[in-house]
Image: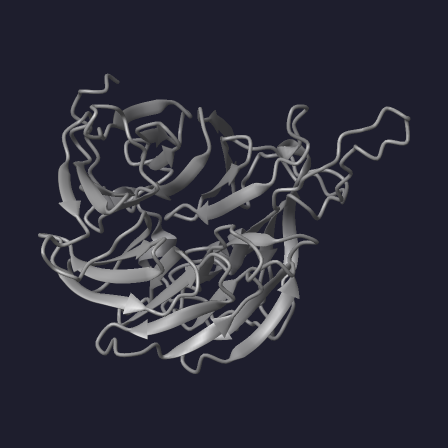
Length: 420
């Protein structure tokens, strides 16, 4: 497809899996250590980059697959095996469970990526995701073929391409919001090219607003038109989508904000920063001070460490430098449990949208001294299979599944039996 052609992306209710339309979220059991269902590490090792650490992982909205980014500027798409899956599964601890379905290479370091909100693997038209990389325009990728669909280009005052640092689709799936230095650019999804609306986050002749790079974006799932922008200036601000009117500016993060996420009901906002050991919880109806803080081991890393909220909206899971995933009760802000996900920094954690699964990614940049040539191999980097890895976790869950249309179908896909 040519870059200037109109892109047609219309959500089709018929393509949305029945599991999404006819079930109540499983109540996950966090008092039981989850089972590692699938594991991947060998395919991330490359001859030119033996320390090809993971950067992030996210489930697709329909739950059929998950997408990873890594230090080799590559995106890998993994399909979740179902009961009728023809993917050969390797059960050896030393080998990957199976290979990536698609491998897509970017030219430079990947800043951010996001799935189209109405994506469905059953509908190739909607099966897309967006990426932003250093010194490149925003790319829209086809997750069925692995081909580049189109690009959305932003230009600076010198008429040179400038790259976004964060990217997100609006809830309607009609626009792409992208974060830049002290501004937001909004692209019409259906019209790729260089047309965009520009909104500064710094108000002229006023002391309010946000300076710095807009490094994180999130839309409220329930408050129509509200979005949150995180900045490397250690602030998070709430805006209205239609005219980018500034509502509130939140202060309190110790480092530059790297991740923002609303609660399922849209009443609370969770923010995390680099070299900051706390995720802050904010009540968007009363932003005088944060509600509580959730600890994670992140005070010594500049990495973006992603967290996620489970489908029921009751718990939050986050990784950290200690290799653990910590689970918190969002009603009380209290720690619930933790489990070891890697022998490395866990930088990504994502709950499956409706099955009792989660996926984690791990790794960090290592600086290895070059081999001095004496043959002792001190310059070699030897990593275990639990470093620079991706794991799919299967949680136990309460057996009662209210309003779920097809319990047998659910259990066949989940790969984990109910806890009695």
